[in-house]
Length: 231
Image 1 (cartoon, rainbow, N blue to C red):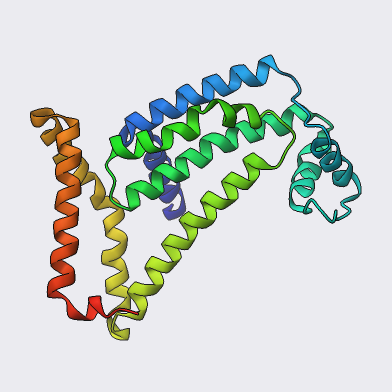
Image 2: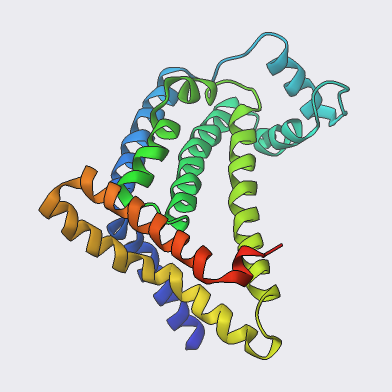
């Protein structure tokens, strides 16, 4: 029963996620529609002279190439089990939306508001070159996803490691519990700045948020000497 309740709770949380991030969810949905149209229009995909055919050749026998690493051919080897190149381009178009989602989540974690984070992630969603290159049998879309994932994962790991290393051993669990609560508490700031935006406008609200963060960081650096000497 507990497992069923956890599944239900997770399902409800997943359904509420787009509602809590309406602007980015709307942009992501629009980008998905555009990418789907591109995918349908240019079946099964584009081939870049030299690179695409070398990748496809390496994916058959999984032979390392002195110029092109084995990672993308391995990716192709898995997706081409059904012998349909259109599957590869469909997944790469999906990678573009996922990459933008990671970018948005990382910016929100850094403290950016939903509008600023959505605007920053929008080029990844709508840039014509990125949509076009995802329709090619080349490694760029996979590489972008891996780099963005590595940056996001590295930030989270470094954050947690610094907090644990500078916490008393007996209070590590409690400190990390409070730290994890910040993921849920970010929506409180969203509500506050949403109300401020309604009153004074979004540009002034974003500027005010930037000044507030700068003031807090500066004050903390002045008051907290151990933090200034952090190595």
